[in-house]
Length: 231
Image 1: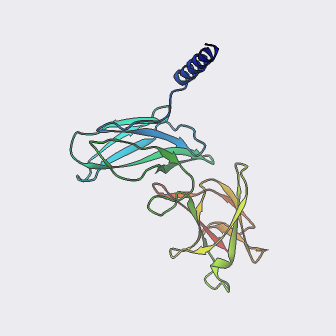
Image 2 (image 1 turned 120 degrees about the vertical axis):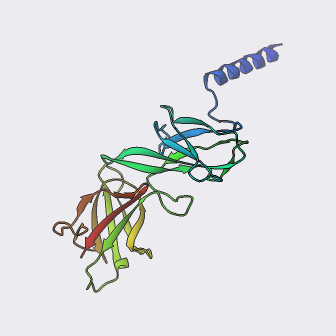
């Protein structure tokens, strides 16, 4: 009897704990898309826009926004179709308001009659489902008569928010000489070649100096660049 009483007490405690901390898991519902949007630290993002696009009909989509808890729920038309879910969120990074594309936990299309749960994360760097990057491109332009290869240049990034400094070697990307997928933010940036300091400035602006302070420019929704001259 004493053993039975102990098990009853344990079971009661578990049930009470379960009631006080509901599961975060969500179950798909027919003709409903739902989920949650968070930042890279796992904090909910309010007012993120979710777009559910009908893959059979052009320019036919349903949209919704997340609440204060980062959750959204969108009802779909009861038609036989598949749907693609994407999203964007506006964030303030380094004092600059930017719109970032959301990274889905599952990029696959869904059948409307099955419904789906699609969670998203707002990222400042990392690989997109299409192979691109969420981070920005830091692009350099050496003098036209430079006696060295752009890939000999190394950029050094000191985050202004107090984050950890890092360095990256310039790559020949096929679309310019650049460092790809730099986390979006504001930096103090300098350049070296073979360990020796170079002069740097924003592209076609101002005088050269040993470093610049800059963020990234949003060239189109979700895509960011920073162009610099080096010598």
